[in-house]
Image (cartoon, rainbow over all chains, first blue to last red; front, side, top):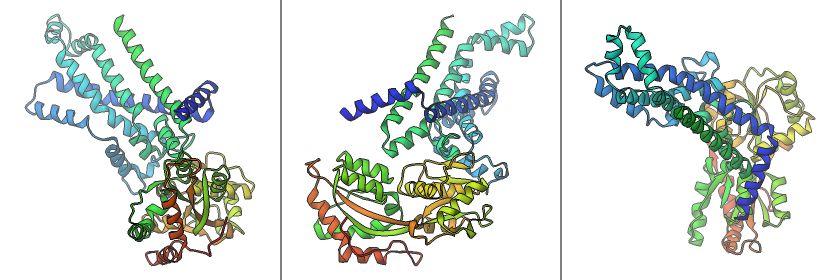
Length: 228
Length: 243
């Protein structure tokens, strides 16, 4: 017990002094996650809308597939992207492996199905009359979809935030594709894994606290937006 | 027992432990982690015996009263590997430390374990000997195991310091070649230490001492010396010495 308290004390010291090694891991995590969620949303939201708003014969299997994609393990995505961007792979020439860009690619693939699924369910849960009503009132199809989007914006935001929560907390993709390089691709989660293996619990606990604070902050902002 | 990943990954423990377990009717639970963590486990009394390779850390461990009866078991050695085209021209260096200085001067990529492992300790010692503080865009601190680091160095066309065992085991998976070996200070001694029963009364000191006796005795030494991967010996034994 004394050991845990000691580590907690040391971790608070690390946070207060904002140690450079520490702040870099926090920063890397945040910007990698932010970029990957941008790409995941660009893929996932249109996909979710398309599936939700159109009728086609394979709709059920496609929805089942989207659902299963949410459960793909991070290490599998890591393996897949690794195969493509390693020197022997088709995109090896780009030298992407062990860079932040590689993590962003992997994380975007990880989050896209989550965003797509949640976007899809908020479309399906919305008032089905919105689209025909807007079109009857003289809106073009594009304008009507925009109207629908503004009606279900909280559902969309929830989709994006869930995706963000997934990528900021995952360790498989960041470790395999980023390589946990100090001051470059070391994220909060890979740093926690490393520091624990070194027996440096204080550093790990400090990062864990920040990670939880980030999750909390994102959710508070979301709640605040929802209340307005 | 806590030990380093190299003894476990190389397969040595799979041949060394069964005869011991049979002889004394016991079961050895192996926790294979970096040397730093292995010693921490000993410090906390979570294990009965540690089997590691970082002499300076081991001595600190003993002098702080966490462990007793340290014995040399065996050694293997480190090698400097890098791309065959050798951009920093380390082949012509006069010593291992000078080879590292040349890498730094050329700004060629060097992948470091960066995880406080025995290999990382040795690497830091060599940088110090060469009078270089490794810092900059060319110096990548991976914070991962030896296999992953060799893999990473292969991908980024960089140099790295590796233990010979892992290097042989990864021989077929990498096109990096050994560019420097055989220096006296590239030796990597392994020691075995019993966790101090005075500090942690619950440890099985008895069994720990039997294990130490076994691996440093006739039978254990024979097994270690005969251990081969692809026909190459990985570890070498020497006369038993008191610390």
